[in-house]
Image 1 (tube, rainbow over the protein chains, first blue to last red):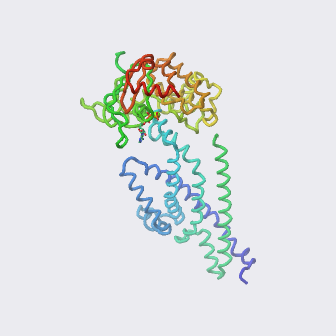
Image 2: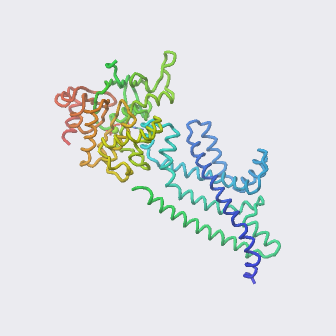
Image 3: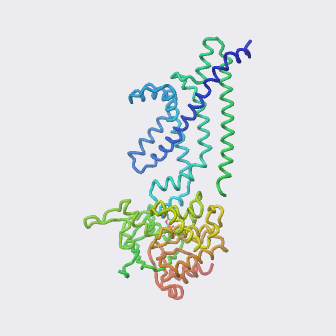
Length: 222
Length: 258
Ligand SMILES: Nc1ncnc2c1ncn2[C@@H]1O[C@H](COP(=O)(O)OP(=O)(O)OP(=O)(O)O)[C@@H](O)[C@H]1O
Ligand SMILES: [Mg+2]
């Protein structure tokens, strides 16, 4: 028999239910890092000083063109220990996810900032705002709401990358399924359930983003 | 002191690539003078205002505002490029209203007017609000304080923009074709506000406009510019009735026929 329901209820599903929150938390924390760091990168990239903007561009290019798995290893085995930190795999994994996706969210922010009409900058200059005030009071409040759905898409994308954390021993869904398989010799059910989890949560998240989009449209006057 | 110009352009040149837009431009504006700048499209009228607002840099020459250099500062008797602090100090004496209003769409009318006084001038919120209410009353928008720009007509938005600029207490106000983006029936309400400003307030006004009748009525002086230079200037009656330059005549003929 390829599929055994009894095995599902008794052995495959319970351990997965116990760790599903790890996957969710890794996604949420990782995304919080990506959301903040991405904004920071987008702002630094605009810095008038090349000494600042060029390294940022280099960093973004580097992170985007290397596999996430390598970055997870670098953060866990290289970066954090080099800083004299002894991270838990979860912490290192979340940080790596956040750094990796910050290079994508920074592009989203950049597009948002560039879509604000020049006249808004000019009006802010005419009112004598400082550069930081222009950014935080005038430009970003207009730049960010329209790109929230695009940021949300990266939340879903990040969620789908969390199984990579298994590689450094984060006991999330994938590693748990693998463990179940390795002592019961049944892999089909645990891995299938993990797949279904991801399917359900991706659908939920996508619906959430759609509703958010509607809400943003309604909220904006005019 | 009172003879000293509040705005002084001396040999100001500004190019975009090969295109010389302001060509060794000279202009003195007296305190409380109302001056209208007219000229064909592309003659550099907006650029003139934009360099005075520090939206565009100048290539050479100097601009003085109320006795201070705008783009320069004096150090050991020499002129050096202005730093940000100096720019902000001098820029604060100038305000501008734009053709496209450029209100902040995420703020109510009231907050559009209070935002800069609070965060740039450091005014207390109550004081800024009180003053904003006064200004919005003056431009006839006492019932629109809480409206967002998208909920206002073009004429109403432009009046908010005027109130917003006035809230910074500039000595010099610039208006760049502020009625050009408006439906014809809304032009009057904005010109009305400007008329009030000109007659009832001590304010230097530099107006770029295609409304020749309005320019004639409100201005102490008309400047006709073309090719980045002043071709002719003088009191409105003379410019409009007896222009000396052939080019002024051709321009006026063209615009007044429309
Ligand atoms: N940022 C810019 N980059 C390149 N060229 C520019 C820029 N701004 C203005 N110009 C050019 O400089 C010239 C003068 O422009 P300006 O806007 O000052 O003219 P204007 O007199 O205000 O014209 P209009 O009556 O059409 O508003 C035009 O040829 C314009 O295309
Ligand atoms: Mg113009």
